[in-house]
Length: 461
Ligand SMILES: Cc1ncc(COP(=O)(O)O)c(C=O)c1O
Image (tube, rainbow, N blue to C red; front, side):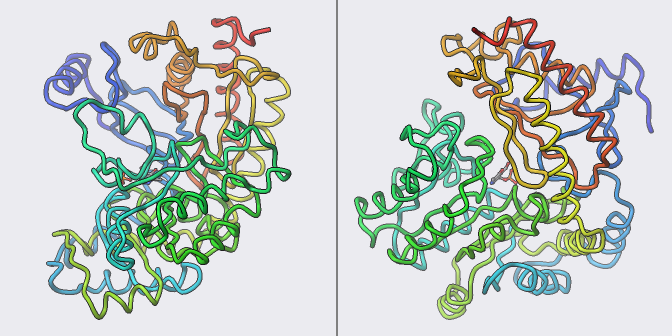
């Protein structure tokens, strides 16, 4: 591993501040780790500090960093053919499209390649609108589907949408997700009879069936809070979409590729969407790639009409060859089964931690796609992030327990997923994580939760 002197480190951070546009909500004086290497579930930064990563970088490096098998395939493909124009075909692109048709559920069969999750969703939205000749898309409040204009508009997350001057496409509508822990209708499952699914029917009817192209969602909505829906939720939504002639699009950018204990999360509900989108785990982060797969009927439609859309890097040979190697690795190492087993173990341990730590309000997840919701008071489910914080206080670890916890965990060598507005901690380690590494991470997590509870005098009585 290359080492950096103190002066070099200082210079790198000065240059990062001088030359990089800051993402999301910048915190004055905060230094994100500058990463120089990694292997499996660990990575290290320019200062030589090692981190155990419970979120697979950005929930995408499913097979861990530094996988030699995949790196060798990518190197060979670079030697052979890195790239060809989308006006032609290339061999890895054709092979990957065929592979996706084989491993995806139902009659999903024809793929359009892009470079990211947002692009894959843009493509899905455009395909649905053109196929149905209808502009509206319905999706969840609090969801994230990317940062391009259509995906910002379709994702209902305020953090993404509510910025002065940003234009939002008004034809995209939203409904609450099946977030049973904080049901907006104040109902309890199963007595609720899936009122949240019925709201989709209601919204389609009110908007006008002919104007709605699709309902788009993650099978387990991450930003809304790692929301695992009840068993009959997706079958009911499928039924509603069929009845109304509206397409069902699953965004499996985060949930796809063995993450949840199945190759694709929709398999947990035996529900096949009309269109499905992928990125992240499709290459496990080794190179960028997005994909949108459609069913036969939609594929046939565009065989005839053509899809008016193109990217210079659509079907990039290096990306497609790497994806094929990554997909082979999922099957060879049985990573979906491994995610199911390790996830069960980790959720069991987190539930045991919940018994010991009163600020853990809820633990939920499927496979290695998990969420821990911290609360100020378990009985009332009062949110852990105080409501009355100023924008500056919200990002300040002295005022916001979640920011404090996330900083402390990092200091203690553990990376967890969080955002300053909610008490939800996301846990999505690489699928090759071992039991010992899970235990190591959970020990750090529990100590950090205790430090946070002590500092903020939680739980509230
Ligand atoms: C569910 C979901 N969809 C889409 C995206 C956008 O993917 P990308 O960042 O590759 O554009 C993300 C990114 O985190 C995501 O989590």
